[in-house]
Image 1: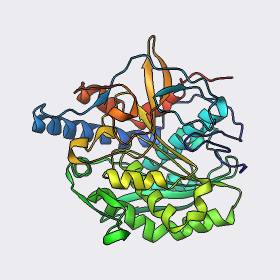
Image 2 (image 1 turned 120 degrees about the vertical axis):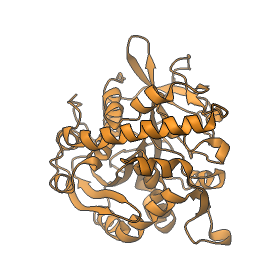
Image 3 (image 1 turned 180 degrees about the vertical axis):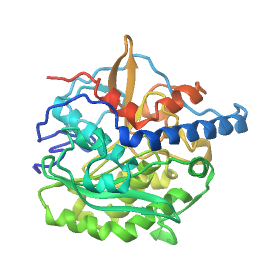
Length: 367
């Protein structure tokens, strides 16, 4: 059993081995400007997008209520659920998801603040203090930003990708066609088809920085390896994981992917290819009615790899985590779906990484 960031897990759930107290803190003041502007641009783009389809397509957004069965098995059980199930995490398990959210939040800070790990509460929360950043990049054509780091307390090597913060990037996210993935692959070397913009954005940091990331992982063989990101950064991260698992299969037993507000990245073939990689942990955290995980829409041929962990609001402002069933479609996931909800208000609000952190901190803890 590997004593790492997530410890022993079933194929899709995590168990932590590092005990750290959970402290509720204000949201990241350094990231607020960039991420808030990103939400404004997202709202404008969503308004145009919804108007353009004139309500003729079903966006399949999640309902906020409907009873689901409670988990009778402990998290980390080898049982594979075929239905959406309310799951109960202990403190360590939930801390590891929240830590990944903070690592994602930090990507919105200035490069120097990331390098020095002085990016407000995204860097100062006790769950992520002591993070040693070894590389920060901010490239153009295509635009990507992120960092590579090590956290000894959590025994993890991580790479985190920044999300969208311009209207132009959101428009690209919604409207670009599917292309072969990996880029320039042919025949049996093609794993499926991916969103062109996400594919290009993942290929650049992979070719430029994966050697440093893998070297750091190899220097710390007892540490888990984490790939994380929010929004567009989550999409880039998922394709980065596909490339990494293919080239470095020896990393898969300790390779973890936790993303937040991730849009769909490719077609059914690519989703199934990613599912077959069998990495240690694969979780897509979705906050309530967040619109972005439902884009680009399924009717354009897009599918999600497994597995969604849905933050659902319960009566009296309480929240719970629902582990959706193993499926590449919204309908098959078992998480309740609805038609076109108020995507401009709730869908954009729920996409904020600050909201992800806030609601994760309000999840009740199991004993």
